[in-house]
Image 1 (tube, helix red, strand yellow):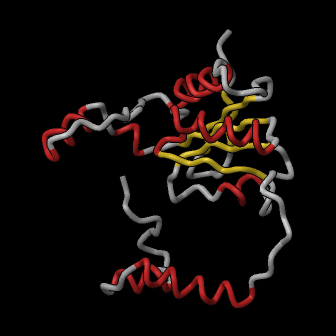
Image 2 (spheres, one colour):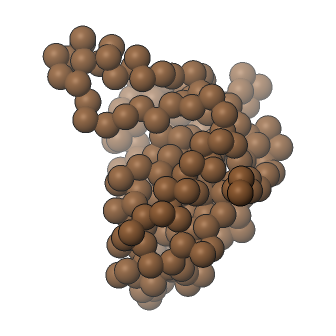
Image 3 (cartoon, helix red, strand yellow):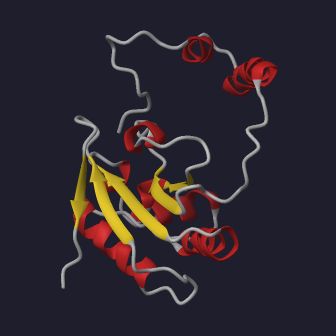
Length: 187
């Protein structure tokens, strides 16, 4: 699993270069935000997504969801975690998204070459040995992205807290081509 999104042939951004030279990434991000804020104008948007869709995806830095899906600021809610797995906290966020903020559709996106494919639940046991406390959460590791998307779709469709479960679709994003491949439920 790579720790950098940059291939050796690609130049580093000024932020990556500053961090590489021993700088603090958070300090650099705060500096960049000040520049952003100078030209920022309140877009006058509501918290309700224009397209009434919530996207659940992996936190992987290689996934630029807005660009990949042709989305603009304000179009969707984006919920990200390791693997894009539908966990109890994802159901919490989707419930708020639907019941309080009007979303109706759910798009689930896993991807190829995910770091969760190389982990097991042993990760939790290792943490417990290291820190003396077992994490309350599951790793949710998987070896078959397609099957895990199906499981995530099932978790959304069967949640008693969600109002809208008729438009739940799942995909695997190919990190080498940028294409989505739809995963269909097994009947």
